[in-house]
Length: 420
Ligand code: JFZ
Image 1 (cartoon, rainbow, N blue to C red):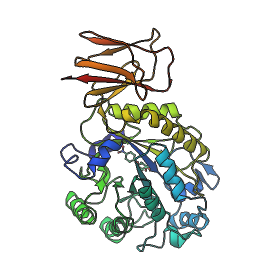
Image 2 (cartoon, rainbow, N blue to C red):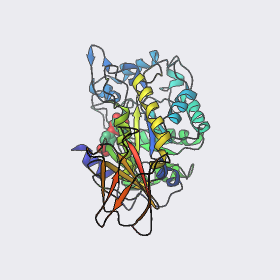
Image 3 (cartoon, rainbow, N blue to C red):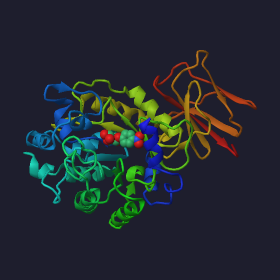
Image 4 (tube, rainbow, N blue to C red):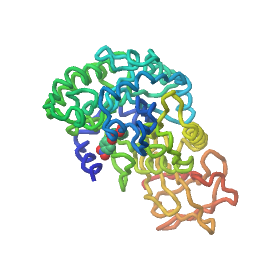
């Protein structure tokens, strides 16, 4: 219930989707990688004698850990396995076009070198280096757009930050003071020190009026005008629409939007969560989101050493192989001109419709309703194999080959001319 409400507060159709230079790359990108990485990754779903499942990045709040005690986790956070070039190369090979990583989540810990606080990875951990700098550079080397998630309101480490009502409970919070002294200066650091950013992914607004939010946005936009701001910046002032966690709109949506999903059941690393979406599920999810006109940003939660879960590595690699063959039916497409069918979904480009077939009809005859334009060819995408078809007024029937290339999702390309 909270999700639906927040979602509606998060955007309005007039405010988002104004012309924006960043929407060019964003609209055709289709596949992004979200990375949740912080002190909670070191905890992996365990605090003292208790284990938690789901939303590992919320463990401080769920365990009601005192800020001072929680901060000590930093002393054992030493991600020696972190390898920026490897992370970026994996994302690239998976067919990812943009990467967004948590610079600071609700726990309040900065995963980048910040002059605003000592509670950051360079000053407070034995690692003493800035992984965000390396990752930003590595992503751009691979041709990926790079962005930061930043929790601008919730900050459980700061007495004046939003959300911590367990150990700062008798305090009248001065949210403006918190924004002025931490959030806004840190956002400026991120925009000034890490090269051109594709996105700042704001989260859960609060504490500022619409006027103040506008002022904050203007002061940040002045630094990098082409950086997109996500819808959760507040008061409907973002540049594109974000749907709630694991939420997909029922029908196609016009304009730029993104659905975010976890790979297992948590954003932050949980060592006892093995419930990973299979390559088939990821591939179908991606085509399903594209069929409605949006981007999928899929999350991976590396552990405290900087290692990705083995299943995330493996399943993303397989997704990338599928995209090598069928990427034309995903990147640069718009929502499908034919709605979802019992056999799968569709995506479109001018003069083309891509049939993403997840489920083979028993009789080998694929029924496609509502194609009225003149069909010129029907082929298995990425091959020269032509398929016989029969077009009538209300449906087109395509005869599928006996050999079916990919049971997870094989794409048929239909080329047509004239008005559809
Ligand atoms: C937020 C965070 O609290 C969470 O830890 C994670 O980072 C996620 C990506 O974002 O959670 C939200 C925020 C907004 C909605 C749902 C979950 N919403 O609008 O539906």
